[in-house]
Image (tube, rainbow, N blue to C red; front, side):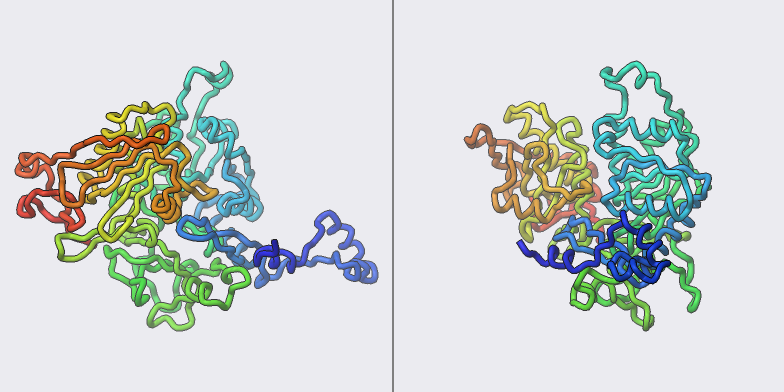
Length: 521
């Protein structure tokens, strides 16, 4: 099949690396190497150096053309931000075919550091291996996705199946200066739990380095780490991923400039107001492959801020907010994954899907798989939660009905979002990217098309708070069962529900006068 991607690959100039040395020697002798087509003099700053794909979490993965100059700048920026030097030791199990794993290899070369690598599959089989790697080589820097922390806490303790050597292998983490967390959102609670668990092993809270990056800026954008603060502040349950300058002086803009703007106008928003994150940097990629002048590339790589002629910004598609006197940036989630909920006929507020998913998972962590819960709107008035069941979860209808009801209660209590459907699916049933990110849009399409491996479905009546219809799916048959979710009037009267949002799409029948409404951002 002759696809556009294969055509683009065929048109590239291929350099046989095994003959580089031979061609270099030939170049010194009457240009023989050039006549054979093997001569290679290096990549110029403006030449395409690397093609890397976006994650594909919110749409088809796009090939990003990164120039040699952008990659070099990005490696230098990361080296300075993390203060790595020839005496540093990096321990990583990130796959090198992903941008962050590759960037740390480039950083190794640029900074002259020692890099110790492990297989991502080995980490997933035995998460404690990561900590043992840090301890064994006295690593000073280690980059991991934020989901690694709760995964280690759940599965990193000894199970009794380890060898005697593994049981006695010490874990000392006092050498760490940078525990770099990528893949936002970064929850304060999971970081605090991890630091508390391993403080006795020497882990210092000041080593926590929440960071932000994306393919369109090569990889690295920012980190909130300073190496001296025992504890970073939090906002909306999250840790920050950058610290922005207090004031931008014309002519003295930072090399990597981050602004939070109104996505429709490009106007910067005030601190404390949620907006879209835009980035201007020498690390910005040149565009999407074979598409550098098309609308998609122009929209993503050539955004402009009013009053800043000549400065191009990359539109990240990420929502963020700047908060506090030190102007910390908090990355809240993807704009495409935000769920709009209606408040009392008076307007809408935006809830980021991961908040709904976290509340849903924490309602039944013993039955649901962490990182395998997806929330999205299925219509303007209905929100669905799809959750993978752990293997070995019982197959009784009552148990699954209770899980669904618990999810719905927890999401309403924690986030003020009324869930219209809870769908339990088999382990591995939700679509993900190659880096493990949820593909919520594709999950929604598969749900509506009936293509998810459903185990149990609970649909809640639009206008009835205390009754729902659940469908028990087993062996190809469907059995109807009744389940209920009752909000006691006494709970509302006591103020126990204070802070919740009444939605026109919701199922709550408690009078509006009994609730204190949240305001939207």
